Amino acid sequence: MGLYLLDYGAGNVRSLANSLKRLGYDFQWISSPEDFTKASVGNNFIYMVIKAFPELSIFILQKLIFPGVGAFKGAIEHLQSRDLLEPLKQYIASGRPYFGICIGLQVLFTSSSESPGVEGLGIIPASISLFGNADKSVPHMGWNSVDFIDPEENAKEGIDERRHYYFVHSYRALYDPSNVAVAQWVHTTAQYGREIFIASVHKGNVLATQFHPEKSGEAGLRILRTWLAKPEEQLVSEPPRPIVNRTPKPRDGLTKRIIACMDVRANDEGDLVVTKGDQYDVREKDVAPSLNSSVQVRTAGAVRNLGKPVSLAAKYFADGADEICLLNITSFRHSPVNDQPMLAVVRAAAETVFVPLTIGGGIKGTVDPDGTPRSALEVAGEYFRAGADKVSIGSEAVYAVEKLRTSGKPAGTSAIETIADAYGRQAVVVSIDPKRVFVDPETYHGPYKDELIFGEGEEKGKAWWYQCTVSGGREARDLSAVQLARGAEALGAGEILLNSIDRDGTGKGFDLDLIRLVRDAVTIPVVASSGAGTPAHFTEVFERTDVEAALAAGIFHREEVKIEDVKKVMASAGIPTRDASS
Ligand code: 1PR
Image (tube, rainbow, N blue to C red; front, side, top):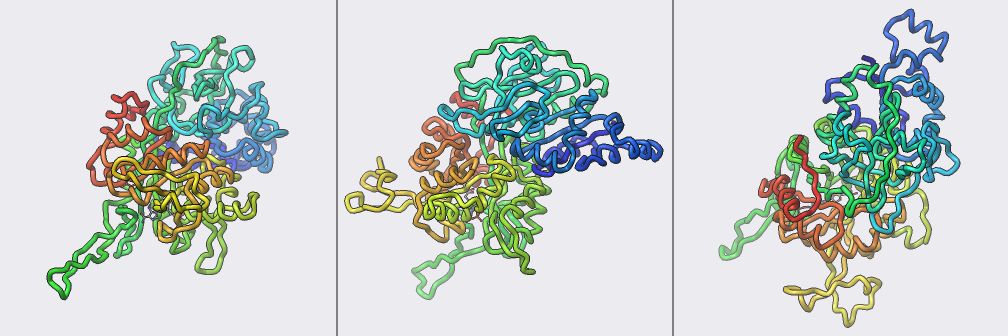
């Protein structure tokens, strides 16, 4: 079987490549019109014929996957600029098997409100438009369930109504049974908020999913495996579907995500290790002798070593983490493009992890030791090509929002803007490292008066605001967490990773005041981080705030709590969660 992947040059296609490798399939890339010919022809004679009559090449290819991520316009323009649009249209029209993923589904439509004036392939006669954000965060990011149009088909293509699949998109094709020409394509729908949208289409030779099978753990691999294992002739004559009406269910199928995070840095021997701080201090506290024997002096000891990043990432995937995050916590000291060990870690982790992988630390413009300047976009591109699905920006986001607040308008040049423009906003996370600043509310007249929190219980009588820091908490800036989150959203971030220096490593539970403040300030998804000590802390954060995800590090590294235990407790509290068992 000849298997081909369309690389239109904009997105992270490494994840799909890794999935196919894991499933034991070889494939070839198609990145030029000639590849439609060359890649598929082993026989010299056929190659000569195809070279002379390129239009025949489409009859040689056997199976094609288009793993699109990013923006509609970017995808179409990249296809056009590489002269791939026409060959792609011809390929689909020729009746050969096609599997589209995310943008690979959306390009089948006529247009998208994301990119007015840009024409899609027009195979499905409808337009893609933006999710409403009045009742939910946008992008739609996370694990959702799907419903078959024809329930008899459940699990036939490897897609299963009892499973969850990873979606990440702001634009969707609404399900509209009154539009018969479109509805007969619809294979499954999904619900986000009150909106029912098309989760997969299947007709003739085309199967396409809005979700990412390659990022959907074992459940997603099963879909790819099923499609890949079927003989070509079974993949080309799918009949149109019946038209059914759908009304929204009381609750959508989106689950709350549990994220395992690894802070990575070099230890004193120079090896990259997973470490973990208490309030961002990652060194053991050694007790040194002092001249006065009644006094003990605490000194900074070795960097805590909690394991190897690649093997821990594989373990967390196997344990059911919904996402994995790797933060290079000392990257501000050097140039990440030159940071080959960290890139190697990402590459190796991406080969074993089939859920989304976020990489943070040092996503900024830098200059290599040889004087070569590197933009933040190039740095991010290195990580995407290594297998990251999202990049997380810390310090640079603070500087960009400070600039935005001074100038009043986006410059278009910040890391957030340039990366979101090229890879889509869903690929850009902004990581916030805030700490409490205590004030006397009677005398405080600073700019963050409206954001003051008044302590309750043990903290009664105290008042504080949340100040942003850069360089891993080493430097405080005159910017609040709320202002940073708002500015980051305005610049194009797709998600906020909300840490707390006060709670980090303490096991006291998430800082609910901070989380509510930031959750209310933005409409993009928010990940609560820092302070988880028990499974009950996760149910607490989901019951008492509207965050989409919760992240923990220390308790998972020290194996005090298993991801599975967290999910069991969540499920028994009625909080929707993904069951990762296959
Ligand atoms: O500024 O873009 O280079 O990014 C640096 C990144 O590294 C930021 O995301 C920043 O949060 C992170 N970072 C820098 N220094 C540290 C440190 O710990 N010394 N780690 C650090 C931040 C916080 C979380 C941690 C949670 C959960 N670590 O990632 O995993 O607090 O911990 P817990 O569950 O054990 O409480 P840039």
